[in-house]
Structures are given as C-alpha cells and as structure tokens.
Image (cartoon, rainbow, N blue to C red):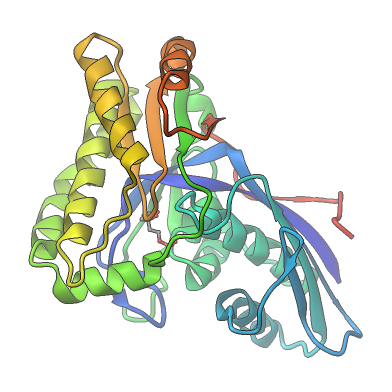
Length: 328
Ligand code: PMV
C-alpha cells in the first residue's frame, strides 16, 4: 500500500477566481492553464500500521492546523474504506505557498499517490474531481499540456473537472519563465483572497461577464498556436483578476516593487518588438510568456533587473504520473 506520484504545477492563462460552492470547491468560471514541466512535486504515500498520520513537506513536518492535506488524505481513506494511517513525504523543487502554484502540483501528486496506495483505480476525470476537492487548481495538474477546468453546472460537482485541450507536443516552443521575486509565504491565501473578492469587490461581476470571451479567445489561440492571441489574452485576464483583488475590502495587493518592475519591463520589450507577456497569481511572482526563439534574449534582459531573485523556465509539461522511485 505504497505509491509515489510526480505532478507538475500549472499556471493559469485564464484564471480561476471565486467559488460558487466552498465545500465542493466549485468555481464560478472555467479556467485554462498550461501544465509546467519545470515546477514539480513528488509525493510518496504509504498506508501502514502507524499510530497516526505523519506528513512531511520539504523536510518540515506538517503542523496539525494545516488541515488541507490531512483532510484530503482522510477524504480518500473514507472513499477507499480503509482505516490504516498514512506516512507521507513530499518534495517540491520550488518555494511553497508563494504564488507558484504549489497547491496545484502538491494536491495533484497527493491525490494520485494516495488513491494508488489505497488501491483505488481512478480514471483521469475521477482524479481531477478528487484533486479539485483538495485545491481547485490541482484539478488541472492531473492533465498535461494545455488544460481547461470546466466549471460545470451540477450541484454535486460531478461535471466540474479538467480535461486536456492539446497535449504538450502541440506547442513545444511555448515558454513560461517563472520570475521569483520573493520566497516568503504569502499573507493572504488564494482561498481567503477569492472569498473576500466575491464578497466585497464591486468589479467581480465584471470579471464574470467578460470571462467567456477570454476563454473563447484562449482556446482558439492555443489551437491555432497564435502566440499574440494567447499572450495578450492571458495578460489582460491576469490584470482583470488583480483588479478584483485590489478592490476588495480590505485590499489585497500581492505585488511587490519587483513584480511591477518586471511588468513594466515586459511592456517595454514588447514596444521594442520583443514579444512577451506577463501573468501573475495570488503572489508576487511574475510568469513571463514567450516563444523559445526569444527565451535567451529575455533571460539576458531579466538579469539586468534589480529585484529578481531567480528564474525557472517551464515548457508545456506532462500529466501527473506514478513512479517507482519512492522517497522512503
Ligand atoms: O487552487 P487555489 O486555491 O490555489 O487557487 C488558485 C488561484 C490562482 O492561482 C490565482 C488562479 C488559478 O487559476 O490558478
């Protein structure tokens, strides 16, 4: 009863922001992402004769008040009808809880490893739905390439899952450069941030009104490999999401000075003919979208900026998968 899974993080090109059902994690809008090969989490789960669950994430034992992971294991244990306690060891190659989609790769890897260790045999749709219960964006990390999480209509959430738009081979020269400007844990979780937005931002209605158009452009841009459509739609969509965040009460501003510095730099390069776009999530990091042909030039330009700590280059990546290289 032991299994290990690796899942890549995903970065949304059209964001998920706001829940219509908080218990089942059902979103108000569909979202589209790229699964990123450079940002991964590897997790080993074993059910055995342990006295209690132990969960170690990046060498730190999980505190008892961090309920998400514990609750997810409990959920799967109930579904599988087992009572054995679990030992979980998990590692990510990037900072956790700083707006780099660690919950997506983390909960997707945990879902695949735990259900396999519990000897359940779930298909991708079932895995995506289950991962969604752990963290909404994790539903998209079950699949590889370009992915859409369908918001679904049903009350029970059975039609709210992620499916692939195109595999990674469709657009191998698409790049996302994750620019790390701070490795500190964020002060407002995305869960709290989106609840506050739905409750208090006067612009949330506008966000929802314009989302179908963004989704349409994004699907079309991805299918045609039209970088201008994909990049400009993603940037605009990210700015709209941040506009709803900054207009909550109290305001949520995830940006740091270096975040804004990079945004300006990207816009400036674009004016000069170097085509790139930015997107940001619930944290200060910027993700730059570009094509392989411009990657080196952009990295060189970035090295001249002050606030940037580190870059991670991501290509379209694989779906979550099992491996026999266990962590213990
Ligand atoms: O799945 P969560 O609760 O980590 O929320 C993710 C929210 C954003 O990263 C801001 C947007 C998205 O679609 O990933």
